Length: 427
Ligand SMILES: *Cc1c(COP(=O)(O)O)cnc(C)c1O
Image 1: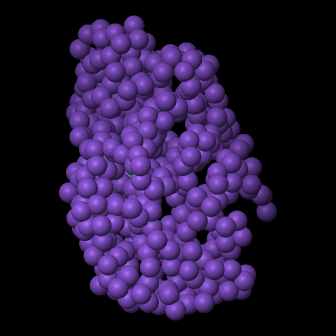
Image 2: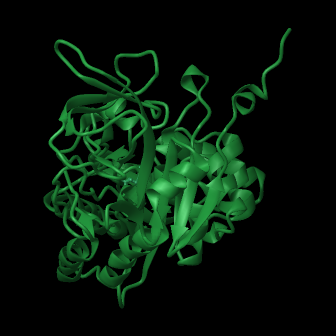
Image 3: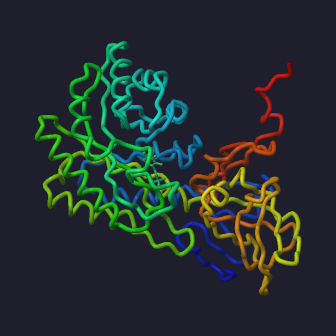
C-alpha cells in the first residue's frame, strides 16, 4: 500500500499522496468526497493536457491534426479542454456530433467513424460541414453519396482499411483483424476507392485505419503503417490522390504495470518510417482516446460493508458495474487505493458493487486495510467509464469534477432517481 508522502502513483503524474491524503493536482480527494458524495469521478486537467502534449511534441514540425476519440470520455467540459487546446474530434454518432457543437468544437475538425452511420446522421454531419467521413463499407459509400447529392454537397471521405495486423490486445477491443466487423479488407480497398471516386456525391480525401485499443507495443502500429502505405501507393497509382493519412488511435496506458510506448517516442518511430517511405510531408491525422484521458481520472467510492466469508472476503462499495463497466466487460484491471491510507497490512478482498449480478466486481484479490466509511479511489478511470455508464438497477449516474490546480469544478451533477425515469410514462 502506498503511504509515502509526495508519492506519485505509477503512470498518473498529477495524482499523488501529499502527506497522508490522496490529491488530484492541488485538491484533496477526501474533501471532494465529503462535499459531493460518492461515487464521484475526478479528473485532472493538467494530466489531460500533458498527455496531449506528448502527441504535440511528437508531431512538432509536421502537418498533423489530433482528433480526440471522444467516446473515451464525452463529458462536455472534457471536450471543451481538448477543443481549446486545438484538437478536433473523432465521433461515432450524431449524438457525439451534437456534444462537440455544444462544447464549442470546430465541426471542420471532426471525423466521423463507425460501421453503422444512419442517413440522418450523415445529413446532420454534412449540414455542419465536418472534415471527413471515415467510411467502413462499399454499401456505406453508396448511401453517403446519395445523401450528399440530395443536399447538393460533396462528402469528404476516407476509407477505413483493415490492415489485418494483430494488436495483441483484448479480443473485444481488437478491430483491425480479418474477422472484425470494422473497415474494408486490404484486398478490397483498391476496388472500394475506385468505387468511391466514381460516385457523384463523394470526394476522396484520405485513408484511415484503427487496429484496436490498449495497444502496448509499437510493432503492430509499424506493421499497420507499412500495410497502409502500400495501399496509398496502389490507390494513387490508380489516379486517386490521398491527401491525408489517418492512423487511428489505440495507444495503451499503464493500468497495472503496462509499459506502452510514450506517444512522442511511438511517433518518432512512425515518422521515421513515413519519412523513409517518402510520406513524411503528408497531412496526418490521429484519433487517440484512452491515452489522452485514461490516467487523468479516478472514481471515488465509499466502503459500505465488509463481508468476511469462508472463501472470499468482500469489500462492498457504492460504485458498481454501471459506473465502472470495464472489469465486468473485459475483465479489466483498475488499481484501487485508499484516499487516506491506514497503516498495517490488511486482508485480501474482492471489491464489489451493489448491483445484482455476480459480474459486478471492480477488483479481485486486493490486499487492503479498510473500514466501512473509508473512501477508495479507483484509478485509471478517465476513459471508457463515465462514457459507458448506465442506469442499471435504477442507479443515477455519478457526478464529475474537473480539477484545475487548486480549483475543483463540478462538470456534471449527480443524476437523481427521478432523472433516470423522467422520460417514461404510465399508460
Ligand atoms: C475507439 C476508437 C478510437 C480510440 O481508441 P483508443 O484506444 O481509445 O485510443 C479511435 N478511432 C476509432 C475509429 C475508434 O473506434
